[in-house]
Amino acid sequence: MTARAVVVTGAAAGIGRATALRFARDGWLVGAFDVDQGGLTSLAEEIRVGGGAVHTGVLDVTDADQWRERLAEFVSVTGGRLDVLVNNAGVLASGPFAQTDPAVHQRMVDVNVRGVVNGCAVAHPHLAATPGSVLVNLCSASAIYGQPELATYSATKFAVRGLTEALELEWRSAGIRVLAIWPLFVQTAMVEGMHTAAVASLGVRLTAEDVADEIVSAVGRRGRFPRVHHPVGRQARVMLLASRFAPAWLNRAINSRLTRT
Ligand SMILES: NC(=O)c1ccc[n+]([C@@H]2O[C@H](COP(=O)([O-])OP(=O)(O)OC[C@H]3O[C@@H](n4cnc5c(N)ncnc54)[C@H](O)[C@@H]3O)[C@@H](O)[C@H]2O)c1
Image (cartoon, rainbow, N blue to C red; front, side, top):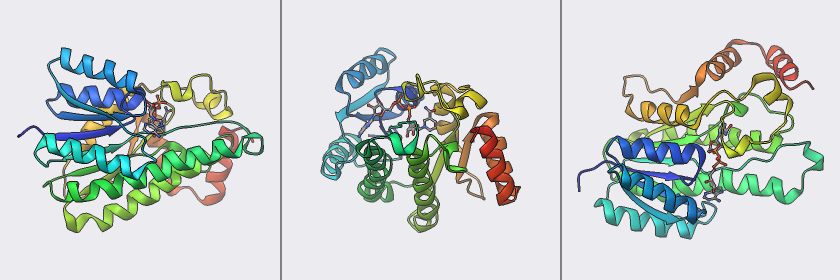
């Protein structure tokens, strides 16, 4: 078994689906996992019609036992290889914090934080056993500054940012590269019908394919100086760069303006 092997969570739709298709087109063996069996079936058909190779399975990323089972099945197909894990599955709910059901806040924390921690923990031995492996976490421009109307979602992406930065340092000795992808708003079901002030100010300009292209390019980029954070598109690049140099009061003022708060 020689094909490079990638696992993508949340692969049935949106960015995960575009990423799975992109890797498959490039000749990778794709492990596509999601809670949506129907979406996985249609993804697998599309990959196979295009001549690609895919292994699918139902995985709720909040469940560590399911993670262990699905990854064990996948590496038994790849001959033990796991070159890349893309922790992509995520959920978002927008609106005023106090008017959002606590169960909805909890679900975002569960999927976006616990799901990613589970993936990192369960995949670690497989990644460590594969030379040149890469862990990719889907972060977000909402981890630049806390976002009103997206407070909990934004907080979960700060957690993903912190986890990525820590593991990038911690796993260097094991030869695992760790990086975060930072899109602003992307045209997927996640932001369909979302009417926050930030969307009104900044628009929804990226496609899922733009993000998939950045993921594939970030995985392929090897240099002397590791790049941990990968903003997607011009808006996110400018915002991330500006946040690094602007003083705290200015960051706050810019975000207050963008979110009209
Ligand atoms: N769309 C955006 O504007 C945007 C911007 C920045 C970052 N992101 C991040 O990109 C990632 C993908 O977002 P998207 O826009 O493609 O979303 P999407 O809603 O289009 O797709 C998410 C996929 O994740 C799956 N999923 C949800 N809960 C799951 C669980 N518990 N276990 C396994 N799969 C689960 C869904 O079934 C779906 O297929 C998320 O982490 C999101 O936070 C999205």
